[in-house]
Length: 284
Image (tube, rainbow, N blue to C red; front, side, top):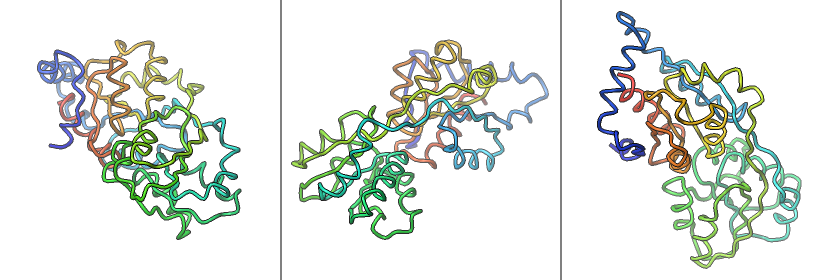
């Protein structure tokens, strides 16, 4: 299936892992308590206030959601430049690569006097932030076939003109490099940053390590998790790691996390399917 192809093999013991996971999980559950296995706990690590949609999906499936925010968004060094850029650059496209980028863009757009813009959004989550404004000019004119920088840069409609790219300070250069290779002029502004925020997470560590699955929507959250649990080796061999997309999954792999699942098409539906697939394979 597509979802299985989105698996990141993370250890040489991948083949033996499922059998080991099954027996370890049954040991943990104890005899006669199989019914309680369906009440899985899933850790949500997104910034406070951004876990609601995922939490609702958890509840539909009868899973417990343990909210443990590990990151927060803050203003980036270029945030004050955005209103001026929106007024003066007259870009052919404004490209937005995350819901947070869309939120920061909206603030800048309003401050700029709501100029006419043509917006491209990386995926549904980002597009929804814009569509909620009920303002025709903000409805994305383009969304790529797959929500990642590779497809975004290859598929953005030409002719090659000027692109305004309000980005995370941590975003890699893949999107702008791909657009420039096609002849676009790209003005990147680092309008926000995602930083570790484990203020309220310390007391949740043991509960989170006992959960059946943990979810990540950014490499920053993965790094914060490994830091707060004091190393990937503290995780149970059966704990599922489910990422919103490949970028976060690669960060997991790099930091030694096992049982990593992610959808080929980043987004909420695929993310939930990845959690489900991981739970089926690792906790049967």
